[in-house]
Amino acid sequence: MKRRAVLSLVLAAIASACSKFQTYRGPEVTRIHVLKGERRMYLMHQGEVLKAYDIGLGFAPVGHKQFQGDGKTPEGAYMIDRRNPNSEFHLSIGVSYPNEADVAFAEEQGRSPGGDIFIHGKPRKYRDTPRDWTAGCISVSDKEMEEIYAMVQDDTPIYIHP
Image (cartoon, rainbow, N blue to C red; front, side, top):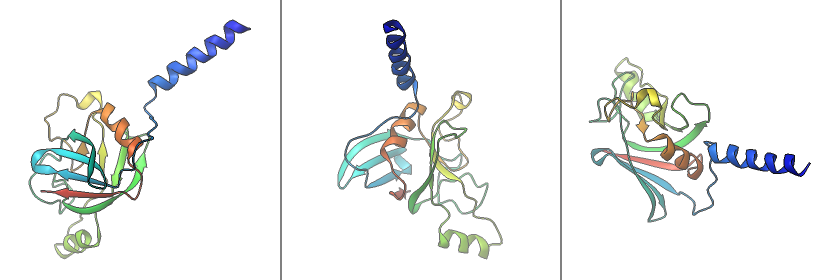
């Protein structure tokens, strides 16, 4: 009986250690800054940098995303608006692109602004791709994405700078 209880505890500890879902108990992430030109992302608490990451961007990284399929990562002020625990890209959190101005501009041009912009991991099958490989998303390692997923809550502002 004792042996079974110990085995259960060991298995539970192993399962939690292998889980992609982490717990974060530190200061609240009050905003995210992405500096596209530097390929860096900063999780901030007020004026303090909590964490910094090297990032990959869309396959056409210069300029603001305007249309579906342009390979650009948006620029501007958005919000984290959703999360996907079952993402093809390990874990992902959604960026609220397109906003009203993005939609209006694309419609004026008779085009779609696109969408489904996320911060996400980089699964094994994408490991050999160039640094800027996404369709417009922000990419980090899977391990980093686990940390970000735990730290960043929905409705966190994200500022994406050129």
